[in-house]
Length: 162
Image (cartoon, rainbow, N blue to C red; front, side):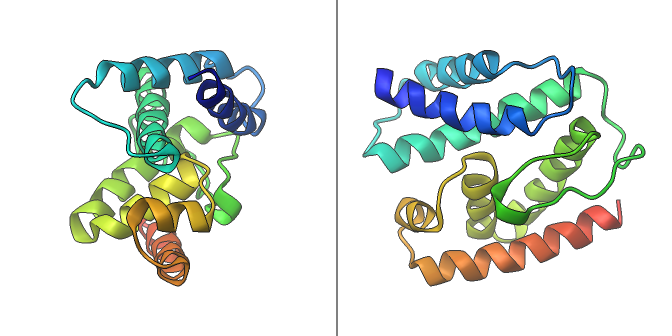
């Protein structure tokens, strides 16, 4: 578990370095909260490392969204610029509002096409590579690339109309 915890810290540290100055959620808090949520799910049997990180991506997404919502950023587009989904990075001075807007758009995408939503979640929130995402979803890397491209375009269009 210590190796997995360190990988979670590395992923969280990467995201937190892209955050604005003075962000109240720290890397350790993000990892600890995601880790505690994962530990609290008792019915889950982790098949392998990729499965663990797929679930960790979900938990990190929930932690980030819960944090953004708790800070009062419930209005969609409250002066926020569109979030960039390039290269699986989260970065913006207005990130809290963007995370909430992205979560809402991603929830809508999940209703329309669950696999595409999982691709975004795994790549964007989980930091998984194309190959790791393909393994987690049991599809080809080409399918992940196609889903990733279509999903990014759809989400950007949805968020630009918000």
